[in-house]
Length: 398
Image (cartoon, rainbow, N blue to C red; front, side, top):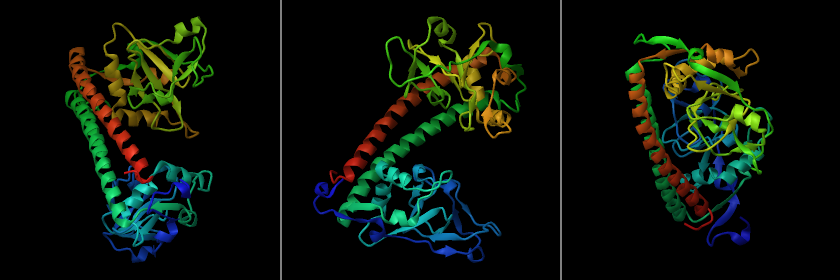
C-alpha cells in the first residue's frame, strides 16, 4: 500500500518507533524455579501455546529474555513458521523469540494480527539471513513499515478479527475431536496394533498383496495438455487421505498407463522422503470416476481379492500413531533420510481381526469421515472469511 492509498486518519511509521523490541537478558542463576519457560517448540503456527512448562532446578543453562502479558512474542528463527503469540502470563523465553512491547498508540491484538498478515510474513522471510537457520534480526524487524488507525479503531478491528479467528479455531478443534473419536474407537475395538493386547492373529502385509509397484518418474507439469493424465505425488497424500489439489500431469504411452493406472481400493504409500512426517503415509484410492497414475516416490499396493484384511483397515493400522512411530524408526537410513521399499512393506506385521469386526469398524469410520468432510467444508468457509477480513482490516475497509 503506498501513501496515496492510506486510509483517512491512519498513520504510517516503522515498527521500532511504535513498539519496543525488548531483550532484557536473564541469567540462569537469576531464574526462579516455577517460572514459565517458552521455547519456539511451545508456539504453533496459529499463535497458540502448547506443552508450556515451568522451570525446574538446573533446567536452564543459558540466558533468556523476560516477558509479561503486555508483550507479543515473535519467533525470529524461520519466521515463515508464523510463531507469533499473545501471552497472558509472565515468564522467560528462548533468545530466538523477541518480546515486543507495543507503545501507547498501538493495541497489542491489532499488532498481533498485523504481524501475521501473509505479506508481512513474506517480508520477514525474505529479510532473514542464514542458509540453514534463517533468522530475522531485531534491527531489521524494527525497520518494518506499519500503518495504523487511531487506538479505538485498532481495538474495534482486533475484536472483529478475534471473533472470526475464534470461529475458525472452534471448527478446527471440532475436527480434531472427531478424528480422535475414530482413533479411540479403533483402540477400543482392536487395541494397539503394535502391542496387540487382544491377541489377534498376525499376518504380513505381503501375504495380503497381489502386487506392489513403484510409480512413474516421467516429467510432470502443472499444465494439462491433451492426452495428459494426472499424477498423484507425495503432496497429494495428506495424512491418510488423498488430495486432488495441486495436481501435476504427464503424458504416457497407453501400455505404461495400463500398468500404473489406479483402481478403487488401491493403497498408496510414501516410500522416500527426508521428512519423517511423510514417510510411510498410506492413503486409499477412491477415484469416484477420476483417473490417475502415481509418481516414483510412491508405492501402489493392490490387495488380493481373497485377502483377510480390508484395504481401508490396512490403511488405518498403518496410520495409527504407534504403528507410524515404529515405521518411521525402522525407515531411517544411515544418511539421516527415510526410506521404505517394497521388501520392507511386505514384511510389515499387521493384526488380523475377523473381517466382520473390520467391516463394522469401517462402516462407523465411513459415517464419521463423512461428518468430518462436512466440518472441513465449514472450516474452509471460516478460513476464507477470516482471510478476507484480515485483508480488509488493514486496508481500512472494515
